[in-house]
Length: 157
Image (cartoon, rainbow, N blue to C red; front, side, top):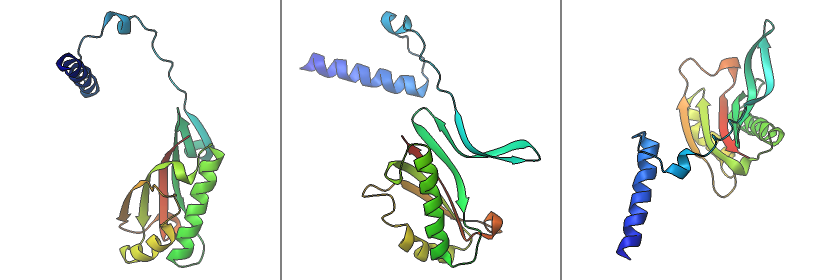
């Protein structure tokens, strides 16, 4: 039992050291393996400015999807803006082969921090029973395009 525990601890330490970049020597079998192929980035809904790519609506790398910030640039209160932004995020996720339930991280940019409570009323429950982590900030100077809220996210496929 003690030998098993030592072996487990050695493997755990080696994994942690590898992640931390301590450069421990690999076993002979591991060093002879072929390098894993590098995944290629895919870009969707590329926005151009003066015929030069500016940003993508979403990108995929491996099994991750990164969705650019979405805002709502029409009349309405924070609840309408939040609902429309969440619908746009969902559309991008579906196009990329993911869903709201697979979102890992959301960043919310509010024009006015006083809208936090009303935004949350619309936001809650939109990502399923296991919601993503989230960062919410009030943006000095406002959200671009006169949107009351902008959101971006990271999801898996």
